[in-house]
Length: 355
Image (cartoon, one colour):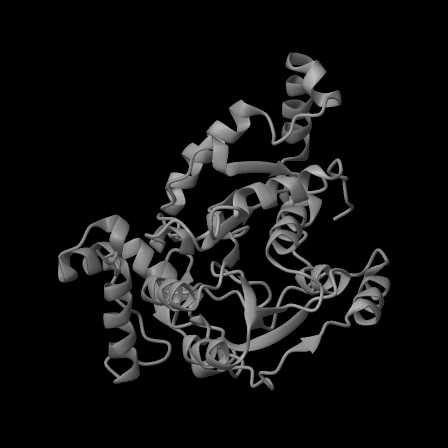
């Protein structure tokens, strides 16, 4: 039975207002109905009307003015146009990004620099004192665990993660979870389990540079799949590549991809699973940003659409760094994949990395 693709009511309300703006019913600078008026007009709840207006603000269609209401944004203040879909030569190539990445980080050093190329929030935006108190309290309560090995990770933590995975639509058990010291180690373990040097991995383009560094270190080739800033990876292009190129794994960030920020629609996620299942290609899903949705409902992981229990791995890394904790939830491809994954991660103690 195929999963049902859900279209939220607030999205339908937002589309209705967008169409009215496009057709000139509401002109630039004109006030649109208040939240309460929209609620009565569309027959929806106040919460739904608020979510619709938030979505329209994110899209640059409307703007809120203090103690005045919501207005259609003028053309001069509209958000810039979406970047064009990347057009890559879809042939396997070797990663070589170290020089560029080193230059970017070197240029970021300095008190006046704002790092727009990394996913590191300013410390002023974080509850640093509260986090430090929580960590200190945990160390005092479970002091021995802070200086001990615990593979594949503390059982209570793995149980909590398995429960929390349900918010992303995933059904996993504590035995499916391996604790790592960061999302990057989880991705690295998955790649080591699925690929050998010289193998090819399908990736979305553009791709998070740390993932490219990992694949360069593992001597893997990549084939770049064009991606849209709205819907993510082009599934037509992916299908075309899988017909002609032996791909060992597919690596992507479907929820709020870095750097595009796109969130793959649920219908695309379901189709992605069907495509990968048909070709027998495992998915390494980096779901690090899934909890950052502005909506009241978290977007589902691609794993939520996997009905075969064979093709998807999900990885997440709670923030802030550098106290990075990641985890991998792996459903094996074939009968030997789980043991292979566990052996790969057991070869060395997880090392802390600077973020």
